[in-house]
Image (cartoon, rainbow, N blue to C red; front, top):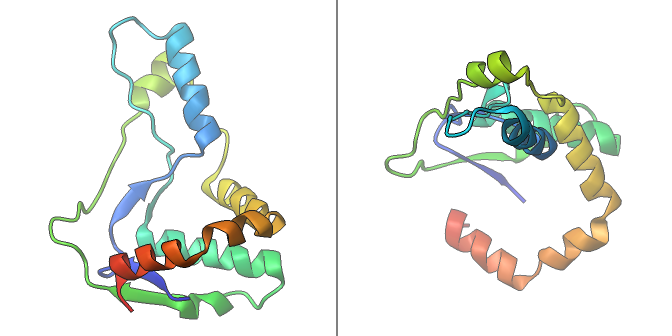
Length: 142
């Protein structure tokens, strides 16, 4: 299946492992100042294209394929109107006041995710049925 990327794939997002997100929330609840706002970030900004390339490279690595072989699956699709170019998080207050920073690197978190899916193919097959294919077609076309 093609892997769709909106526009040129230059939209930037900051990525954060779910366990790091939960740890940050816990730190804020336990040590943060009541009523204060703390932004949580992953310190892992990547373009959508960079993220997908990394993910496909990890799949290649974990499945024994030649590095970069899956990048041919990337397909650029028309960007949606008003698509936000960048989501940036400044979590310097959380880092400075509460001495918190992410534990997982983006690559380690993605590798862990890829391994989970490869080890749970039965679960993956259960979600790839006709209803999912209909959703995919509505979102991305043929």
